[in-house]
Image (cartoon, rainbow, N blue to C red; front, side):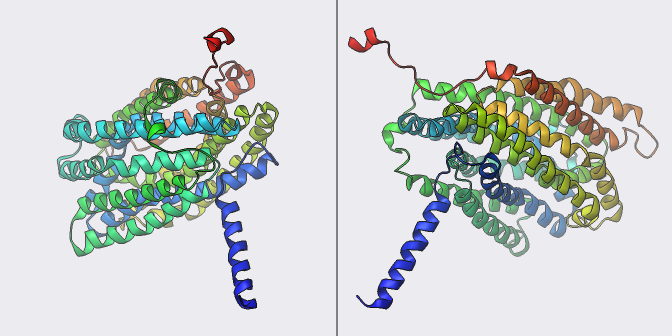
Amino acid sequence: MTTAAVENKSIIKRLWGWLTRIFAPRDMTQGAPWKRIAEFAVPMLIGNVAQLLYNTVDTAVVGEFVGDNALSAVGSSGPIVNMLLTLFIGISTGAGIMVAQCFGAKDRKGLSHTIGNCISLTFIAGAIIMIVAPLITRPLLLLLDTPASIIDWCEQYLNILFIGVYGGCFYNILSGILRGLGDSLSALLFLLLATFINLGLDLYFVIELGLGVSGVALATVVAQFISAFGCLIRLKMLSNVFDLNWKMLKPDRYYAGRIISLGLPAGLTQMIFSASAMIVQALTNSLGELMIACNVIVMRVDGFAMMPNFTFGNTMTTYTGQNVGAGRMDRVKQGTAQGLKIAVGTSAVMVCGILIFGKYLMDIFTDTQYLIDLSYRMMCVLAVGYIAFAVTQVLSGVMRGAGDTMTPMWISLFNTVILRMPLAYLLAYLTRCPEWPNGRPIAIFGSLLIAWTVGCLLNIIVYKSGHWKKRMRVVGRPQAAPAEAAE
């Protein structure tokens, strides 16, 4: 072998070693907590932003090339999508906690069974959604008093998403498993690829084929299947960490039960949250098509503003899960303090960006100046609340990672059902005027700001009380007693 060939082989070997280290599952029980948190959060944040581009690109394309009514149709479908995906959300939450704890405890068998049961439960939940959701889409839209001008588009968009639900379900569950293993980079790469594919297909289906709202839904489904397939290939490559075979895919009462019991509170929370969002959506619909479009635009920008908060919440769930599994509660305390500083600082920068560049962001979705101005004003109402929500997400993420999924559920339910929903209707009643006979837009967004602030205070109080530590649940199949083992 020539000297050049040897050098090339050496370079390839070093490059492969570097890539292997970069994409390897990350042990968050070692090293400086803030560094482990940042290393995990940055790729995840980029990935979450990319995932938001799915719906954002959809709304931008239909708003630009089809019209404001199509924009309203795509955006107002969100609460229904979230409500009907609660089965999957519960599985995803329970899976993330169990994977993190098993990985932290170096429990290969438990990790293998957990991942296998996650995949099996996702397949079952996806089948239920695919069959049931299209049957109830139209009745739900009618129940929400969806305007006749957009109801058919809403139904088309939702039915395509639900029929192709396996792509989104499996991407999210498989990427959640990768994140539980500490690998937030692999899922990012597959998602970025799928995002570009989604953009290209959006433009092709809408502009070239004239498929309108149906086209953007179809593009989303195709892109999600591609990203899910990439995550599955990546998991198959991690045979040194866990086993993925037919035996592990067989539903196991213990592991499936733990996944469901840990994830059920999150699923119920999301279901009630989505149901309340649908009720508030009915209030939004009663304010007219202009308000519907305003709400869609604000929520699209809100999605990006919220993404750092959700990212750090999920990061702290994985970080806490791994360290609880390893019995390192000292690192949980250190990581919480450092994670709060990073999350609040990031959110503050995001708020400044919204206040400075907000109008330019609104301009992406519509050319109607009044709608741009109205959306920007409502975005400013929400701005301060993002910092409060950052604290909420970090602290609730810590509690969930420790296995206490009930406490964050009760706080979320209080804020959503008891506080935000009645407050929105009360403010709408109090702000009626000739221009807005059913209430001003401030009712929708002001009630949300108040709920976020109260939620932040409640999470601080509960976390400081330490009650969540008494509710910790660590994964691990109970061992047989000596007498039983002898038998």
